[in-house]
Length: 327
Image 1 (cartoon, rainbow, N blue to C red):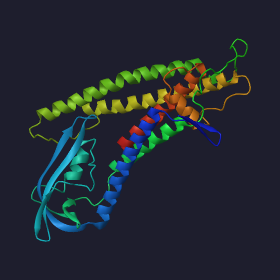
Image 2 (cartoon, one colour):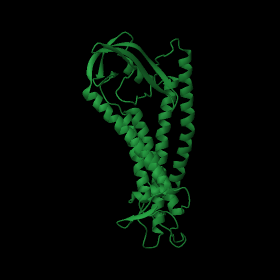
Image 3 (tube, rainbow, N blue to C red):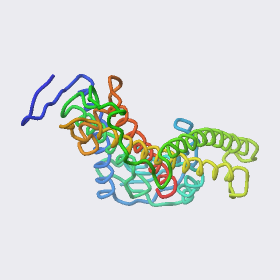
Image 4 (cartoon, helix red, strand yellow):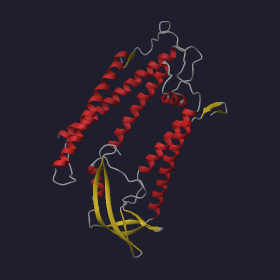
């Protein structure tokens, strides 16, 4: 369906509707759970509870993560209840390392008396940690991102980066950006690709080897849920440092390639006859449409897509590092 709003063309396809509905579902679920968590934290009343059992289990869905299980009993107005909720809401957090999971479960040894928080309107609902979790915010963020991308893709012209006329390079060769950081531009391009290849070889090999060593150490330990203290000088520690360095190399490679690709995009724009189309990097609707396009892109459109993808990889990898090191 095509329409125009205040002169701006909008094209709504079946894919647009499906994407927005998925985004709305994620956004609504996250918002509802966050509201439920906030209400539970504000309205709950405290009671004494006795820990029946606590444990840590390893999940392998998206890599190695750890889930905390705590079962406890409590009395509310003379009636005994049992619960296994650690946090309020339906979304339980997972932990990247066993040490983080152990720090959460540490106060809840079997037989310990602790404080539980009970919903007075539904006493069968209780939790131990009186705080909201980040889980709902992740659903809200992903849902909002899906809605934003689908909306930007639908708004504006639907063929940017296609059938763009370029003057022959032999007739109009740009002299800009011959060097980057004082280095020949082609050398920067080759260096970025070599760094990427090296990182993409080192990263999976180091990560898989580290996981195998952790698994082997866990299997050889006497207890079923061993606590591992890893030093940087240990083989596992060295491998994880190598993984970290490989991610930094990949960020450097993507950043160098993105800078080179952006200058190449600028050189291509100089070959366009006037009037030139608006820059996709100043008009998000054009950029998103190009990034989501599967085919039919010309030389200019392909360059825009590769540039946007490179900087997207940089942002994603920096986010991964921040998640590991900070959050």
